Image (tube, rainbow, N blue to C red; front, side):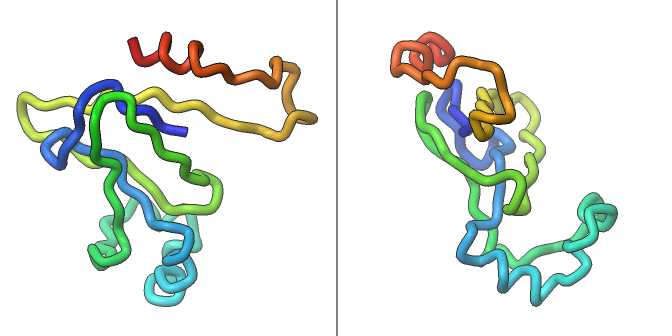
Length: 110
């Protein structure tokens, strides 16, 4: 779960990702991406498959960073991108309390 800490547009260098419904198409068109070592190479994925997390402070997005290709983009000079990232794991893999309250999220944003 990614939460925007301020209004974010393309100038802020937003988080970008491939939607789940497009992953098979991207894998077929760009088979080199299946090898993690190739993902840091400049591979220009057709923009029709790329989504950007743009929005207002407090907006949030759920993305499977395990299954979906994703990356940050570079902010323009004088701009920044600040987000909070919360990772969800199966209960049997963590000893943390399994409680997420609205107040906790609001405190992170404020």
